[in-house]
Structure formats: structure tokens, C-alpha cells
Image (tube, rainbow, N blue to C red; front, side, top):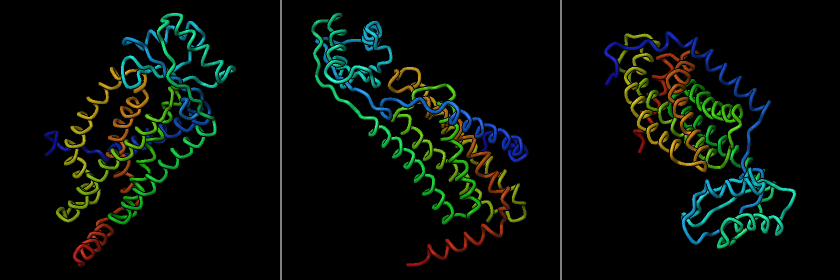
Amino acid sequence: MQLFSSPIDFLKYRKLTALVSVILIVGSCFFLFARGLNFSLDFTGGTVIEVAYPEPVQVANVREVLAQAGFGDAVVQHYGSTQSVLIRLAPQETQGVALNQALLAALQAENPAVVLKRADEVGAQIGKEMAEQGALAILIALIGTAIYIAVRYEYRFAIGAAVALMHDPLVILGIFAMLQIEFDLPALAAILAIIGYSLNDTIVVFDRIKENFLKMRKNTTEEIVNASLNQTLSRTLMTSFLTLLVVIALLLFGGSSLFGFSLALTIGIIVGTYSSIYIASSLSLALGLSRKDLIKVIEKNAVEDERP
């Protein structure tokens, strides 16, 4: 089903969108190298302290008390219930028992019934290992999807999809670096989710292109790609819109602990929808995709599917 009464000539704007993509990628790389990511305690290490209140407490009040005591950079969130609070601190000049006592004293000055439940220290080396493992996870996801598409479709599709999949997380990371938004493990998880989300959109378009190469035998490759994009447009936009409704709700009402996660998803859904329409298919076409190349792959897959 087409969303608009008349088809949109997507490929008419492929040079303009290619320029936009280059600007986004170059800009993201610039901010990543010039400013770097603002890593959270998940990656830098620090102290994690859990305290318990006798009654439900607002995290905003706890943050205010800690800021007045000189712990303005503390990350505060509920942990399990509204009476339990988890506090994360970046590496401080004072460490260990002295730091724990100073923080507890600040909280007890406002509420003497506060109890320290646990205090743990996360070393910088552990944070470094988590950052390296996160980068490795993204790399493996990109390589794996490129191999799958190359085997199932055609290598030009694989290149287009791989570039689109690299484009999306790079833009997300660039925006985080530009705005110096804290990058934590939930934000990393969001990037991995976006790779899968964007890949799903791209696969839907590629499947329709493959089908139309068999049906539209008198049309040019450009006309087939354009028709395929129009035929999948309603599905792409409706999926993105409905997903965005949930993610924006998280962004607005999820609190500070989910801000990085929901922001990365919001950026990723928008950029991923754009890349599945304008980057993956357009780049495959620019690399010389033709009916002959894809028909060979279709026939090869048909023979393999018939084998017992």
C-alpha cells in the first residue's frame, strides 16, 4: 500500500541526500575526535553507594542535598523501590571509607534515618574494558549483518547496508559528543538496538526490490528501486512513528537514568529511517546494481532452497 496518491521520486534527491550524509558523518567524526564522548561511571569507574530511607524519597531532593555537600556530579536514581536510592560518583580525591562516611553524613544531616546498605568501587580498568567490549559488540554486529546480506542478496546490497548501518551509530555518537551528553551502558544498548532496527527496515526494502526485479521486467533498475521504496514507505513511516511515540514518552518522562537511552533511540529511529530509504538502496544503485546481477542471486538461492 502506498502512503501518497502519486509516487515520490526518491532517487531524484540522491545526490543531495548523499551530500547531507557526508556532512553528518564528517561532522560526527570531528566532534568525536575534537571533544570525545562524555563517558559515564560505567566506563570511567568510580564509587557506587546504595542507601535506604524509612519512607519514599524523591531523587531530586537527594540530588539537592548532595549538591549542597559538594557532590554536584553525583548520579542519583531509585533502586528497586522508592525507598532505596543508588548514588554513583566519579573518582574523587577522597576515596574508600572516608568518602562513604562523608556522603552518608551529608544525607543524615537532612534525614538521620538514612542507612548505608552497600558501597562498591568500580576501577577505571573495568570501565575501559567495558568500553572496548561495547565497541567490539557494535563491530561484530555490523560485520555479521554485512555477511548475511552479501550471501542472501548481492554484494552491492551488502555494501549499501553496511554503510547505512555504520552511518546510524556514528551520527548518534557524534550528537552525544557535540552536546556532551553522558554516554552510559543504556545508551550503548540503544545503539545496538538501532542497528537491528535499521537493518530490519533495510531488509524489507531489499526484499521488495528483489521481488520487483522479477515482476517489473520492462522497467529500468532506477524505476524498480523507486517503486520499491514507495511500496514500503507506508510500512516504514508507520513503524517509525509508532516506535517514536513510545521512545519520546521515555525521553520526556523516563527520568535522568533513561535519558541517554531514550535520546539515542530517538535519534537512531529518525536517522535509521532516513538511511534505509536514501543510503542503502541509493548506494547499491550507485555501485552498478543491475537486473542481471540480482537475477543470478535469486536463481542461486532458489536452487539452494530446493535442496533436501
